[in-house]
Each structure stands twice: as C-alpha cells, then as structure tokens.
Length: 351
Image (cartoon, rainbow, N blue to C red; front, side):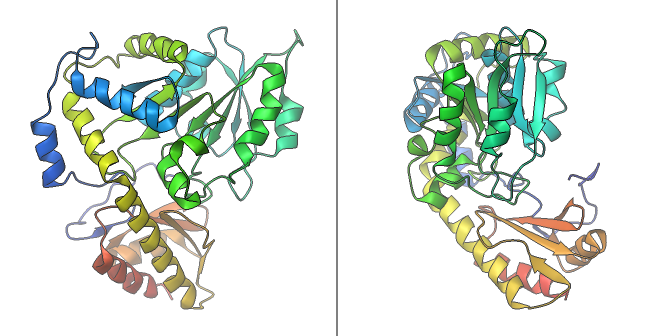
C-alpha cells in the first residue's frame, strides 16, 4: 500500500470506496464555512480557530490544542515537540508515521526510529517495546517517544484494545518516555468501544486527529496535549510553513463535522459491517473478508488484486489495491444504504 498512483480515469458516476478522504462538504457545511467569523490565526486572533482548539482540548481531556493542515503535519509536530533533544522513537513497522509520511521524523525532526512489527489487532508487543526502551546507554540514541496508531489503518481500521495504551503507559513512565497517538480515526475507535474520546486517550501525552477522514471535513487536523507541548508545536508549525491566516473558514467545517460525528461514524460502521457480512456470505474461495471486527474499513483477500480492482470499477465501484493480495473499501458519509447495495453487487462479480 499504496500503488504509486491511485487516481483513476473514467470514474464519473463510480461509488468511491478508496478512502474516507474523498468526501465532499455538504451544503450545510459549506454554509458554515462561508459564514464563519475569522481573523489572523498566526496572531491567534481567529475566533473560530480558537473555539475549535478549545473545544478539542476539552473533547480529548487535555490542556491545549492546535489546528493544523494535515495529519502528517500533526504527527511530525508531535515528534518534533517531544524530542527537542533528538533521540529515538519507537514506532510500528506498518504504521502510517513510518511508512506513508515520507520519513519526516528522520528528514525533518532528526530522530532515529526503532520499528517493530504490528500485531493483527494493531498493537505492538509489550515485550518488544520494553526490550527496545533505551535510557542511559551512551552508545545508543535515547528513547524519547512511543508512537501508536488508533484505529490502525494497515490492519483494516482496528481499534486498539481498551487496556492497551495504559499498559504501554506503565512501561514508558519509569523512563519518562512520552506516548503519541496517531489518532487520525480516533473517533472511530471511541465509537467502536462505546466510550468517550477523552477516556480512550487518557494515557497518551499527545494525540492527532484528522477532520478530513471519517468526520468528513475538507481539510485539517487537530493536535492536542499539554500547554507546554502545544506552545512548542505552534513554534514548529511556523517553522514548517504551517502558520495560516483566516483559517476559521476551515475550522468552521471542523466544528460542523464534530457536531455530526456521532451519527456519521456510527452509520459508517454499520454499513461497513453490512458490506463485510454480505461478502462473507458469498462463501467463495475467491474472495475472503479478513475480519469482521472492523470500524469503517472492509479488507478482502483475493488472488489477483489488480484484476479485482479493475472489475470493481467496471461495475461502478472504486477500491484500492491495499497490500499484496488485499484490497480495501472504506465507508464514509457520502455512501448511503443504496450505495452499500451497489457495492455488494460489485463485489459479487469477483466470485
């Protein structure tokens, strides 16, 4: 994952299940954006951005927050702010931070990484983490940060087990190692476990969440943590060229997305489950659902993923060749019940 190019030609009228990043702002969201009260966010004078940051800090149970352009920027800022003295981060080998953010932690933040295998449930082995923690050995970079991903994209949008982050916290605390969560889809994890976002991230030092994935806004992510941490992230955001001006128009979209998040994400999960169960009911050796314990992603295994993706497109559905012999379909707010039926029909053509 991913192919060099996942853009498609002749896709007009197709049901787009490649990602939850493909959504379009609704008329109501556009109206909120157009009518937003704005100011200069670099001067911290944009009232809509300020209110979004305050809202998100409370939502996550943290002291402060900063609105940034992308999840990739949010994750990089977190690494930079947590590793001012450089050092090492521990990160999953198939995590988004390591595999699909162009090595920013090394190229820009200047830190080393120890990469560890990801288990089927999105976790990293606690024994592996403990074995890799390095404090006090002057021959090695010192461990400063552990990065987790929730939900975990590569394992099909799985929500981490509820007690996992607290177990990592117990390993990290004796060494004063921080924990950052790439929570691009953390809202999906909270709804999967039927608990608040604040509860699910209570043991993390920082969290990044995307508004432009399952929540359906056109752009933007939030990074939350302590006031000291966010103050440093704000300086680093400026360094990266991420200071923006009248960003309140985009913050208004994020506000609107949060207002409707519970309903949208819950429906996405229900529709993903229906699609997965329908594919499983085909009872075919040619197409297998990897797991029914999903959030808004459906991962299926096929013999020839490129041919399968092409067949799906012929039947009006876009999916992506995810990894090796797997393809991915992601449910999102622009897919209704009728769209799910169309997707089921298209996947039936693979049998």
